Structure formats: C-alpha cells, structure tokens
Length: 213
Image (cartoon, rainbow, N blue to C red):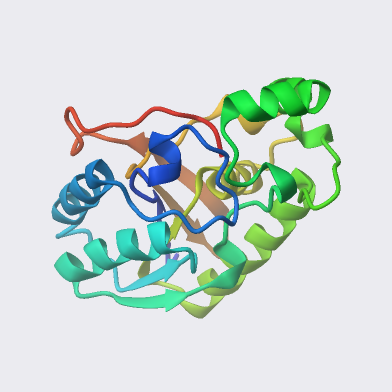
C-alpha cells in the first residue's frame, strides 16, 4: 500500500490571537511570540521528509509555512481552499465585543457552532466541504509523498472531522494549538488514518491556548 503522509499544521500565534480577536479572513501577522513558535516548529520538522507545503494565503499561515520550508527544503503552494472560515462582521472584533453585540449567536458559537447561520458567516458544513475537497485533491496529486497543510484552527477541526467521518457536534471536541502539528496518513485501500494530534513538544513555554477562531 503506497501511503501518503499529511502533516496538519496550525499557524503560529498572530496579533489577533494575542488580542483575543475573532480572526477569520482578517489578515493578522504573526506576533513576536508567533515568530518564535514557527522558528521552533521549523526545527522540529527538519527531518520530517515534507516535500510540498500547501498553505492558506493568509500571512500568518504563509509565514508559518515559510519557516517549515526553510528547514525542510519543501516548496510552498498557496491553496485558497485552506483559508480560514469566513466570519463576516465578527472578523477583527474582540471576544468581549462579540459577546455584547451578538449574545444569542455567541452562545450558539460556544455550544453548537455547526448550527450557526448569519449573513457573511460561512457555515461549518460548507467549510468542511471545501476543506475536504482540497485535501482529497492534493492527496491524489501527491500519492506516496509526505506533504503538509498549513492552515487555521477552524479548518483543521473540520479536516479532522472529515478524515474520521465524525457527525455534529464535533467542533469543540478537538483542539489545535498555535504552531502545533498533527499527522495523518492516507492509503488507497484504507483511506485516512489519524496518527497523532496537536503535537506541541517543540514549543516549551511559548504556547498560546486561545480557542477563538
């Protein structure tokens, strides 16, 4: 069985994480802490064998991908389908602001985000479809290779649900810390298998644990 290894990487801490803002498509750069995180991430993955990195176009993800490419020699391919969830009017606002302005919707976000529907807000089910379409395509294109996906917590959550065929509610059942990496494999005979999740040994004291998006 010719297996494909897939590293699933969340970007380093951004200024939006640091300020506890909903990020979505807002293009926040990495924070100083985030730059330290991705440097350590690159070192940790130096001998991973990653050949191609598929990165979200947002700068916090692309700069994370660049840190991994620097140590692995992998080429970077910008993949628009791995962009974060679109959050409409929530983007760039702090958690406190959203809780005050959208109390009912915020409560649903915390409890059953799969059911949340708002203008400009991308449904979780739609996010999962676009993420899995892209993942399935790049796996077909890179059969037998080791590749990486550098993206955002919401998108990694739906990929996790997609490869394990989970049904809602699943969004809050898994966590991806900033600059963490997870590993899955794919074979034509068996499909996807999760190997490990949310590895952060390389971060030491420079972790960020916010679970906003």
